[in-house]
Length: 483
Ligand SMILES: [Zn+2]
Image 1 (cartoon, rainbow, N blue to C red):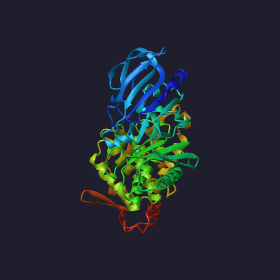
Image 2: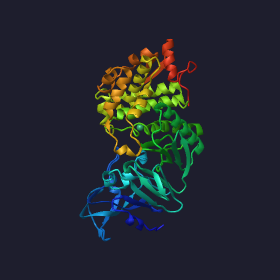
Image 3: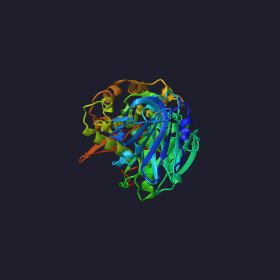
Image 4: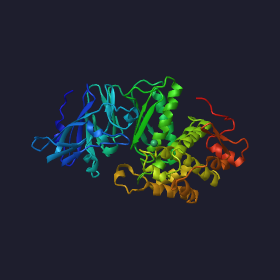
């Protein structure tokens, strides 16, 4: 397994490159490479709510053009200062799985069987900063019989051309299984490992159904190549637990192991519908800023709506998810608007960004459908956004970007023909009066103990029935069905 990495030295000075060597017997990688010459080097130290990542970088060494090693000074975790600038580097990264299981979908780790390698926390930050539109070459040296898979462009055996280092995710392992399909012009890969209660084929078919349904919302596919990495957690977790994240065109999903096939497939469907939606929103939009209130909360709503259409969620379950979100959002009260809460997502704004915003998306969709006599829905807003603000393919880094909140609120107002909704529910702190908001649509809100319940009124008009039917209601559905 001691393969040579001398090829790194032959790469031209402008091209950033790295070789990542996976040691077979330890949770660590050895990285050697070349970047723009520098005397100060730094690595990502925190991501989302995860801190202290810089501490994992060890034995950081620079190598000058004469091949002499320079020992930089560690000035902080993941921060190094050298007396002399150099372009070549070598270091090790300790990749023990994180202590908190949910973090394992968001940072690199490796164990005896498999690992997730995310360049954002593995490579120096200069790889993102100095790339100037050119691609980085990333090679992997793996123990036998390990393999590497990714949505990135493969250049050869274990070699990839990476467009956006901050977003690239690689799955490595000794027993990985893959399946591929072409869905509406997008090459989709499932990379999985471990034993599940369902067959790989069933997970693959579910993914295909969801991609097709999302394409119908947007009218287009988001990228040419995407993948779902479905792994067990590297820690011992309860069977109901899952954690997921979507980076550019890679959905990473870690799941506990429910024993029943139906239960496990239902569990799979929730993160798959939600995370696949992120391939379009926000990942395929040329929008920036903290507009999480839209790309998280509205996504939760729209994904649940799609799951209902696909029969993965019953209509009562769909209403129940709104009721749960409403109950959760009441805890955070009405201190901040959704826009303000989005800037505090990882500290205190979380329930607003996800739960309250999900309720607001429901109210918006109901109003738009009603006002347009069922000719329009929230899907029209998504279609317009992807048409008018696409982050086009390889040029996404240089695409003209606009503020997400400004653009999205403008589109929401344009579709509904008034700025009142956005002003009241998105830009202002508001306490939602759910019974009053839902009554016009034939939905009644009851409180049982501390829990809210939403149900269809016994007497509803034809117009109300037509609208609710579009959302998945059918008259035969009575009460929540047990899963
Ligand atoms: Zn999300």
